[in-house]
Length: 114
Length: 108
View 1: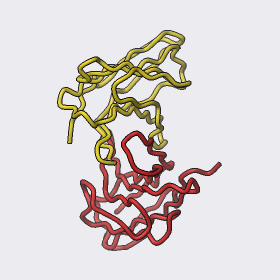
View 2 (view 1 turned 180 degrees about the vertical axis):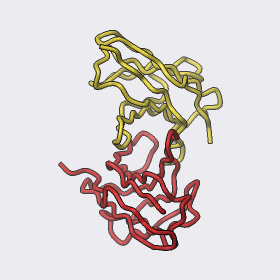
View 3 (view 1 turned 180 degrees about the horizontal axis):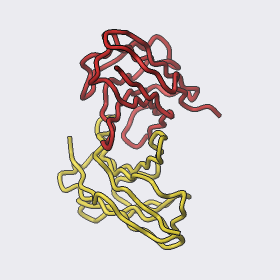
């Protein structure tokens, strides 16, 4: 059972380049999330989506964009990479509404911007 | 967002119980208490959650104070595989707000 799958696992970008981090889930979950984790810190919410066609900003959305055209996919776009975006990015999903629904996380994408 | 306070680190010996404390004095009546753990180089993993009553599952137990201002995650018999960062989180309006968590070290 795949769960939440993130690609790529590692990537090095140059300043100013753009890229898309891919996230897909096979659990038919409505809610999906993107987090970033800086070294030694907890995760911070970048964007989230409560269903196809609906997205909203989290705590640290600047420099990122998202789209949600299908239930399964929730890509994260970096348009102009900056060194401050060097981090580990995690995608997560949860079923339905309600704060009693656990989030399921992918294994992360480790991104370095030089 | 309601905050949680956890010790930075704790240590345990293998096969002994571990009690991981969490304070959340500003919890609201609708906030669920969630625990996740993160093993090195992996994404967070759901452990357990509760609202008011104590909860048990195959991984752990969650003891919630009567006033809900604190909770304790209980690992009944720690193994080396339980060494991880444990996050206590108040799940509010569909969002998890992670703190820095407790680093659990398990000694053989």
